[in-house]
Length: 173
Image 1 (tube, rainbow, N blue to C red):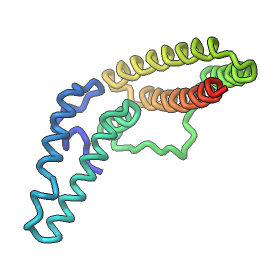
Image 2 (cartoon, rainbow, N blue to C red; image 1 turned 135 degrees about the horizontal axis):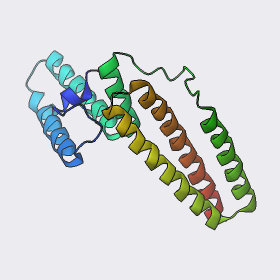
Image 3 (cartoon, rainbow, N blue to C red; image 1 turned 45 degrees about the horizontal axis):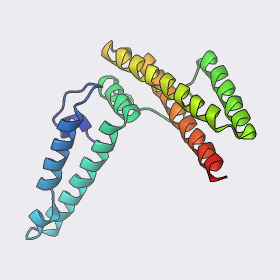
């Protein structure tokens, strides 16, 4: 995939103007709409479909803070993130993960809706702090630190999904 920032004619930076992003997306999709290529050759139609898919992929990258950060790191370092590679080396954060999992299990066992809501709020506050730290590291061009923070954000994303699943179970009762 090409540079998503270039495709949308946006500066390579973590903070994006969502209104501008949506505006550019709509303009690109309008340009690539199949009706515009109805009288063209099948090769041109196929190319338009592929470009439209590229625009959708780029939009997904730019809208997701984790993917956007990884794209920025790749643009500046030339190195793509390998998700198969275990890169979490922050022992304190690993210990914190264990504590959070134990807490979630305890909340689920107790069926404590109030505690679950408070826990989710706490996790979202932690996630927001890591997002802010990520922006700082990207602006300072601290690529390794920024890369490690994207790992933490992936963990938060998974943990929030787990919390929401427990929440669904508790509210079904």
